[in-house]
Image (cartoon, rainbow, N blue to C red; front, side):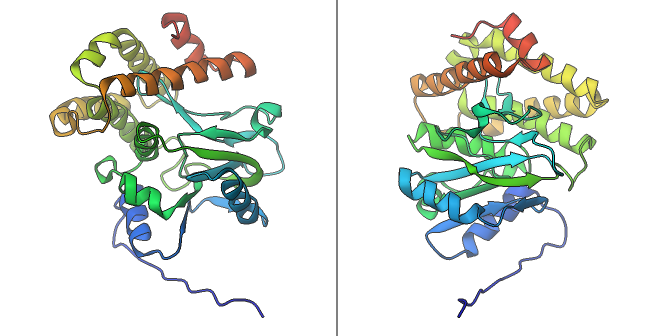
Length: 283
């Protein structure tokens, strides 16, 4: 006899953003594990079994699997996240062909919330998502908090899902570029003290300018620029509200950027990262 399944649906009158919706679900969920999954993701039948086994085996605080593009193609949509000193995040493997790099389990700090499993006590310790971000980079912010708290997760490539990718707002929706541009700036405001901004001034400038060029390539330069401007206008609201010492913060972003460089060197440089690392020397 199959166990009964209790489902509760919580509806909002309007779209209040990813962070608000997920926080509401976490607040009402029961159990030791919390599954966060986007509405445009299809999990393989054995996804939950494999992800739970990996998390338990490694005693991980959270776990993510391999995301593929829709259809029969073996093109990566995402795996785990990393973020540069410029607060520009990379969904590792995005747009690349599946290979041994993306088929090896590894420890991670940044879990994309496209499809991720968390122990409930992670939220008790770290807190909920930053609702002021609305959507985009709220999971990057959560990953920074996990890294600063010393929490690690696991990437389990045997747990496979397919992601339609940005179907809620549209792949090239101006709103996506506005929120992404704004929230990159807010990450800087939240975590970087004055001394770190001075030390990372050139990577920040180069990375943020290149982000605008990337948006321009998708014909969304102005939404991205407006997002940057609003981020600067809200700078004081977020200033130094993150947790962690300056040394730990700088180590976290340094280590993440070095890993981006290593993976890009191994799998081939995307145009953004080729330009970034031609201007910025990874430490």
